[in-house]
Length: 288
Image (tube, rainbow, N blue to C red; front, side, top):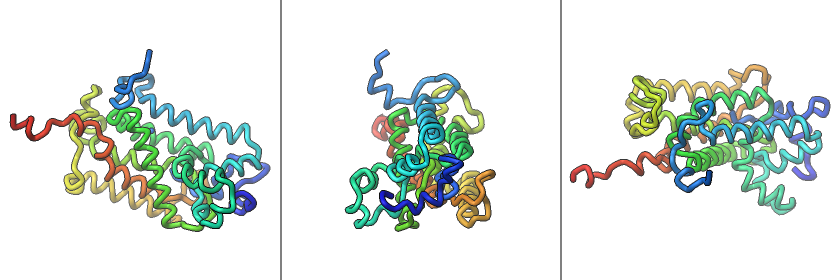
């Protein structure tokens, strides 16, 4: 960062441009508007994808396009210093030395801004597919505003876990995978149930997105979900050990710790964002 460009000089090839930055980075692979519009699940939209999901994809695509087509190598370096998540930033000597755009300010906003940066078109495309698949049912259940906050919160938790493991490192982390992992975990709480949007006997109406969510204790007794959890954590472990690599990305390190952090945030924090719980009848009303 700032006067030191050690991490970027390895990551960006001046001849190949911004599209190669991920080779040296860790990649982390949701008439008048009313308040009710933002807090309630959206109606059917074009392409059958919620507007908030399309908006997030558009933002990621725009950031990547600017990096590929507009910024030169020096500008791309400065952009990463300011918006990628760099564990080495969280050193008081660095925070005091650099201006707030690279120090205290970036120390706050990069917990979420890194999720909108991707190292290559394949990296972006891979994350886009999973966001469409798992972000869509969660966004339809949560509504636009809640889903946006949830997406950013999962990204922040993923960054915090990455920081705890890689404190002091100057290798930037980029990618939305931590936030998308949170969406995958949230979808597990309801989407695969009978009548849910991804489950057996599913329907296309809004009721499919309002089925009661499974309690964590119940989830852990469902063999299908236990197998899913085992496979998901196993694959991330293989990424972390370098046994498995993303096709076309060579030996790019994978920020698997951030994936796990985001996933656990979505799994445990689901109830904080779930509007269906707000609408559930109380015990008193049931007894009445």
